[in-house]
Amino acid sequence: MNKNAFISVISHEKKEENRGSVEFQVFCFTTKIRRLTSHLKLHKKDYSSQRGLRKILGKRQRLLVYLSKKNRIRYKELISQLNIRELKTR
Image (cartoon, rainbow, N blue to C red; front, side, top):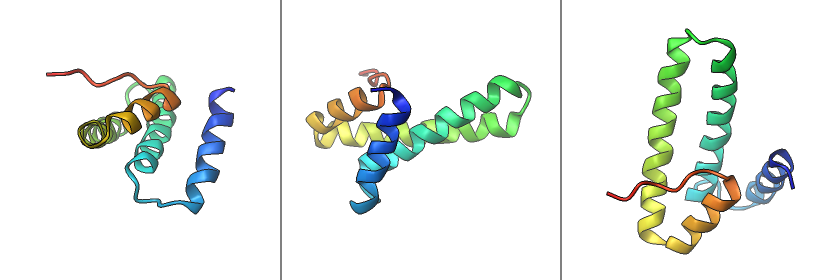
């Protein structure tokens, strides 16, 4: 299953579910991050978008830290589904 098909499946599943859940918020941030990175490949000097990207990355990281502390199984599933790297342990 390619990424776009997976993303559409998640978005349709999550529309009926709780939009405030950590998984849905991380999913939304991930789609924004992917969209901004493709934008920044074309517009390398768009510093406002770079700043926005860094803010969204920080928000997603904080949510992932929260999820990894609360429920490690859900965290592992989300990481594998969205195909993003695992957090560094300190």
